[in-house]
Image 1: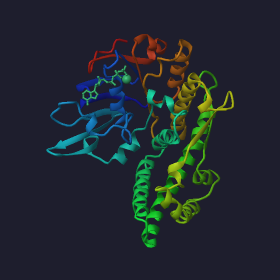
Image 2: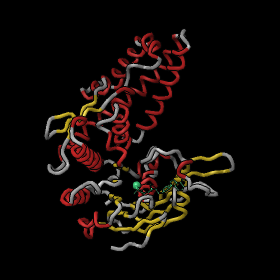
Image 3: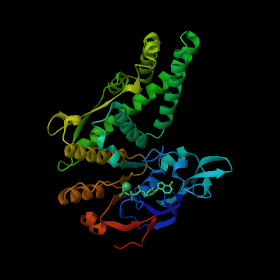
Image 4: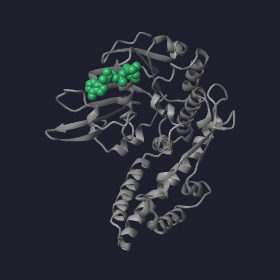
Amino acid sequence: MTALTRLRLKNFRNYETVSLDLDGRHVCLYGANGAGKTNLLEAVSQLGPGRGLRSATLAELTRHNAETGWTVSATLDDRKIGVGLETDGASSKRIVRIDGAPAQASDLAELVRIVWLTPAMDSVFRGGASDRRRFFDRQVMAHIPSHGPAAARYERAMRERNTLLERGHVDPAWADAIETRMAEAGAELAINRATVLESLQSAVDARPDGYFPKGDLTLDGASEQAAAAGEDFKSIFENLLEAYRSGRRRDMAAGRALNGPHRTDLAVIHRPTGMPAGDASTGQQKALLIGLILASAKALTLSGEGPAPILLLDEAAAHLDADRRAALFDELCDLGGQAWLTGTEKFLFEAFGERAQRFAVSDGALDTPTA
Ligand SMILES: Nc1ncnc2c1ncn2[C@@H]1O[C@H](COP(=O)(O)OP(=O)(O)OP(=O)(O)O)[C@@H](O)[C@H]1O
Ligand SMILES: [Mg+2]
């Protein structure tokens, strides 16, 4: 099983220093509200690409009143990995270390893959397209680490184009250059998304039927649909470029780009009822979301590329009845990667039995494992 066997935090959120020795089983964290359970999951999430499970800035993660920046270091299958914020007077920067040596975030992304579920995601089916797109892009990033940088390139080019269009008269050569970069990054995003959607749907179908229902997924963007239909990069790129070019006047009037993969929505159908997930009940949505996250982790395992994912489940057990909790734990044990779960009460994790290690969290400290 892919597992963290040691985790150390320094000056991270409400932890001054904490060192956790793990035996490779799943990890359950329990404790009162405000104790620091989510902070620990957030610390683990920093080992993956992106900003972690609260999308926090690096500075927000530093413990209030700390003298230096934060670090999170861990042992993962005998590799020593670490990330942190190094502060040096007024400047600070993110640092990555692998086996003691400075490394790139992209190197780390090859070693560790992380999928998470948080209470903040509960509204993903009811919210706007941007919430679902972000949720889906997060899954894509776990599969394809270069997806994050491609999204950043796309955003940058789009902002430049917006600024240019705002000025009113546009230098066509300049606009062409920006739109070319937008279409290049956009085609890459669309292909990544279509690729991951397909493996995610296969993993959904491969999951057991039962408490966490299956969903049928589609992306409504023209570029993603073209990619799913087998169109190649060049063709998707050219169509996007043409759409940006011919849409300039309209986009100028709107003050933003009306077309492109930054508008794509993820549609999810709750398979048991055939209804759009947005119309499902709160409980159905929650169960569907758990199923999707399990499928996302399973897709990473099935891909056979890279290690099995670490799964972070914040407060996922609290709203489930005993049978559903037991079913969740059984499914987690089949995934091949270590799961980290939080809850306010220890009894929530009873059905794990000997398959998990438990830690009591209180006020930024952890007690020794109790079972
Ligand atoms: N940068 C920081 N420095 C110090 N403390 C912080 C920082 N950021 C957050 N905290 C504190 O960390 C505490 C624990 O937060 P956390 O979200 O981990 O709690 P939790 O155990 O998950 O609680 P809940 O059960 O309510 O979800 C909070 O009281 C919060 O104010
Ligand atoms: Mg919490």
